[in-house]
Length: 431
Ligand code: HAM
Image (tube, protein in one colour):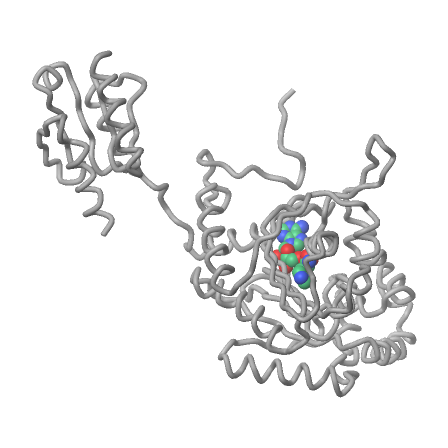
């Protein structure tokens, strides 16, 4: 029996794959950028369990959403409790923040998370059953400036990694009265065409008609194109919020397009919604998406505080980074590779490696007792800057040979001084 990773999942490997986006170093590079960025914007990391009670997602995300009704990995534990692997981060984050009373009124709370999410979807390009999200959530401010800040954070991330060919699609799904008005307008428009709707959208017509606008079914596309715009149903408050946000983004020179078909597949959004979409792909690939969710904290049993955030799929971003050649092409390489010939020499080599490693210098040591040519070849393959050679002849004179692998220059150092000298070379290189 040959065992394989479950369908829709994949391994992140240090080597052994031609797909650079699956290499650990690609993930680490992206994660480093994310941590720097969130620190600069004042967001704090939160880590929650990968499973929660099923009820949290039913109530939080909405039982009629595809994520909850079709895509959750739900199981019963030995104690008879219904649990689900988290399909997204917002509900889990909020559960944790409320449980630990983090959300005091009168202050602004800003969090981020990086971790796996689980959705039982049909695996296809860019769609996994276990995917990873970087997400941010802010609680406490209902101001459009807050929406502008999170859109800026996402755009700044893309700018820092050099991403091209993406567009922020922006819309407002209004407040509750706006949505009620729009729901009626949409139902009036769709009613005469009910039989032309896809079976899924016929169900949505009864339960959650707005989501019809989100349908990817080709059968629904023509009808969706002619549907009324939610932007015409906004209350004065929701309209003014949207206009101020657009003004702020213009002022900050953050490019976006208004797209009134962006509805988002989760029930908690109010007012602003947005998606970062890759321009070069059909069907459309959403690199990240989010929006405002005023009312959600209260619905989950917390204080009446506004919130906003987004989630960004890391696999999709890394795949696009690979296509746009934005991923690091090399592993970090050792500064020194030590080849020793003989048991006594190996002992001294170990002493040297340990001294240098304790001084924060990356050192590899040949444990497989290679001959000098094979050792040098391996050092070059690892991208080492120097190779050190310690044979019986060198040891008897308390010396060591150092070879600069690029220039092939070779010099002999006294063993008693070599730690200090190599440290000096290293610090010169890193400045
Ligand atoms: P979402 O749009 O469902 O939003 O997911 C966010 C992002 O995760 C998507 O834009 C996509 O890049 C990625 N993603 C989703 N499903 C998959 C999948 N099966 N395979 C690969 N990537 C995927 C949320 O989850 C909200 N919680 C975002 C949010 C946070 N809104 C407010 N705060």
